[in-house]
Image 1 (cartoon, rainbow, N blue to C red):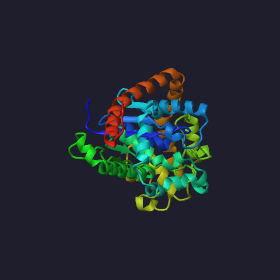
Image 2: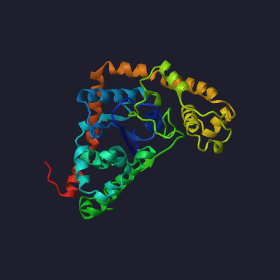
Image 3: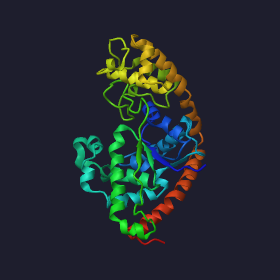
Image 4: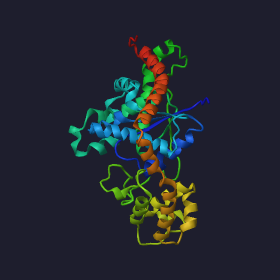
Length: 345
């Protein structure tokens, strides 16, 4: 099947994927398989911007791949691979290091958050991370990128880099046969759904994260049914009954979060969820949320475990995906080298 639009997205193999990844990205990825050409990557080069245990990293790459497949990504419909198997990502990232401006990277808030007070000891890779993200997307001339709110700034930078490349090399782009003088498309963000930003079960002001020291803060895709139910039961709440209208959720972060998760899993709006639970205590919502979470996620852990038992098959899927990815990125990189003025064999 031929599609006019191409999607690229990926996740890091650092820690287990969780409910936030599933609701904020993976459900959307699965739907996009039906309408777009989709390339989904395990971004292992991004993972090593901070030190990783090499043996744990190899397992994590396979586990994220298994989670992708268990959740519903089809290696036949989509291209699934790990980033480091396709050299175009690193090659184009260097070219973009020479296109992007220092001032642009200095404005990236996520680097400031991740590096914290230890900024001078952060890796150059962590600082230049957004340029690699731009390369991930533009190595395939992707037109659409599903992103969370916290990644919008990086996507805007990818658009800036694409635009500057088109401007800087306009004459050679035209000489290469691209009459409009634009080589890269400006990728568009895809941000939809009631739970694109799932928050911690222990603190409604913080995003659900693999790096949170408390395992009770998140529902991992590797959690079994009993663990899922236990975590929802222990989720932080406030003492008041749930409101009947959205305006009543203002300032009630935990209520917003749990209702948002329920709405996303059920495929309803927050207003519809409030119609069901308005006036009720949190215990009623938690009971219903636990039931739907177990129903939707409870089988994933077993499927991930089953897939992880056959590492050779996971490696085969990643290898086949990398071959398909190289067929797309190879000609694009040849164009880019010609446009920039680099000799190639």
